[in-house]
Image: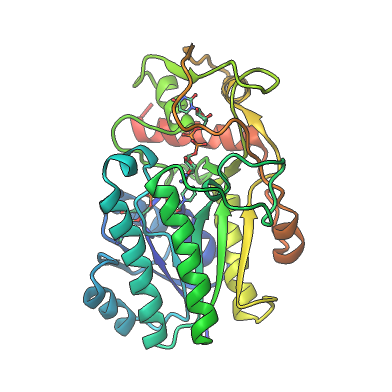
Length: 340
Ligand code: NAD
Ligand code: WQD
């Protein structure tokens, strides 16, 4: 029988790309989303790319009864849990929204998995759990640092919830993937990131500046202790990231996991500065980005990039797309959105 996967947050940026890769890997998917930070356009995009009438359930994962209905209606064996609120700045102003949404949704998913005998879960964690790392590149063994935002704290607590539930109950297996900075879009330009309002993240701000929606990109600081003074990150292509979920699910289905709960960094292993990213975007797409140096943004980490060795060796996964390909795909998506 074909493996079926429930994708919570399946209409979102990473969830929609993952749904495509799961279908292309021969699995069935059920998408569940309350559309608070997405819309049906992404679901339609997934359907168009895959040529399949992928089922979609509009549901709030915090509503246990409603989510229970999804578990009762569909026979998936695994869950990829993306559904969460993710704006770091908003989480500082509205912490209760973040604790409630991110923790309750995970707890409901875990409870319902146990109730319905569904075994495997992949959880979306984040490199934010490492804070400012003591050494680079950062491995999974690096200590987690006290979270600097309620959002970041929900990722740490969620990892702990999963670890403790898996250790206590013996009927679950889980993999937490710690994403670095996901960017890019599907090469079809039918799905991509859909930021609401003024983008807080670098790449959507860059593409909107290129499209003329924003006047000028502010580079937050050029006086950091890095070679060009701007922050360094590990920008991971969203399609590569999506494929990491496919191999994580397969690992658990095939029983190749070495422990019931495992954690993997999902990054390229390559650090790229903000100024370098802007230059590479300009070169890859043959255009100019109006940008200026602005003051540092509060809370920014100086530099972080992944040591992805564990994912490379254990999952057999590695980032494949070049930064130029990724930056061309992300611009193609922005042009598609704007009709330019
Ligand atoms: P996204 O906002 O595009 O996707 C999340 C989806 O979940 C949205 O479609 C939203 O409508 C849905 N959702 C939120 N709360 C829900 C609820 N209670 N019930 C049902 N649906 C709900 O975000 P994304 O970038 O695709 O992120 C996916 C996951 O990856 C999140 O858990 C996020 O924290 C994590 N993550 C993202 C990044 C990043 O930079 N994008 C980095 C690390 C980790
Ligand atoms: C990248 C770099 C900015 C916008 C965030 C979350 C993290 C994780 C990934 C979820 C930084 C600079 C940005 C701009 C800029 N998400 N920048 N001008 O902060 O590394 O990580 O997303 O888990 O938790 O914190 O990503 O894209 O916001 O910033 O100069 O207009 O770009 O200062 O150095 P960040 P980002």
